[in-house]
Length: 380
Image 1 (cartoon, rainbow, N blue to C red):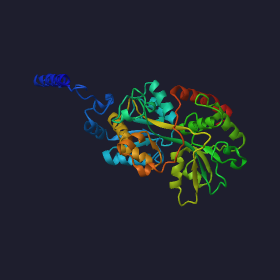
Image 2 (image 1 turned 120 degrees about the vertical axis):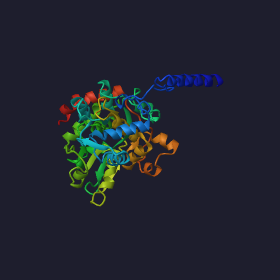
Image 3 (image 1 turned 90 degrees about the horizontal axis):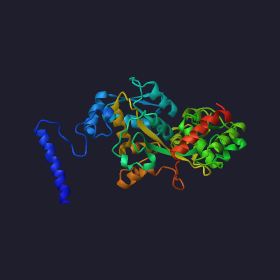
Image 4 (image 1 turned 90 degrees about the vertical axis):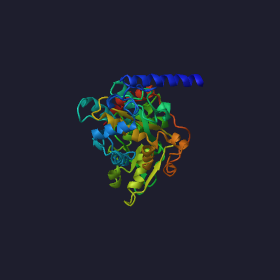
């Protein structure tokens, strides 16, 4: 211990000598001077949290994309970020999908309208990282994120997630389905919809993966999920309308396969409208996945982009996810350190067993299969 202390003291004296000579001061264990936000790999590299906040406030704007306010409480998160830092959040194409976010990174590269940040299914985050579109950045809580929920190089990291579920309006459907097998019954003719195109949208892709697990498939074989939807379509049960609160209230989409945090929100948002929304996690096809956050390597507002990530991984940001039933990626760590909102966490539906996640190779193989087979098997 004493020898270690002497090494630290010697290093400090060397730094002091450089300052005396009018040279740049050195910081033990860190860079010699703060770097520009666009090159900062952490808040410390940008000069510390206070410096990052000042730089972000000077930029005054954050460009986001495909963030519906009703999705995983992005409305509350945007309001909270704007109020806390005085930085305007501008969301382009709020109802866009993961693939469109990646395309926007490439299409608007170097332009002021380019997205600063993206929120995509982790399959798409991995693809963007391979294309060298993302900036490495370690948020303060990076080490607390489970290893299988982040890129080792900090180019992306999962922030929230949930389970595929079946939502149903019990005021319009006599017997609500509780499994994928149920969905094939004649009584659900023209009633079953998913959230987007599975070749483009993470929620719909996950619905196909869950259907595969329910029909003899596996993380290595998503084809049975595609075959299931082909049967659902042939039976006349698959309905192509994009679901949401308005279509539910109008009776157009009374049965929806989507993330539990989206289905559970309908209970709150449609209260008093006559809709009796019920949600179940199908026992024959339990599938969980999380959504990843990442920074555009060429973000027009690089400081605001990094501050946004810090906010969404802070206890405040993670607890705001729970408001709309999304499961924070740091939930276990927050339960241990006492920062988790226990009342909000207690509202989440119970799920049996420990969630399993497909590997990057399995996800990419599954996505390639869906893109190659979906249109032929199910159609547009």
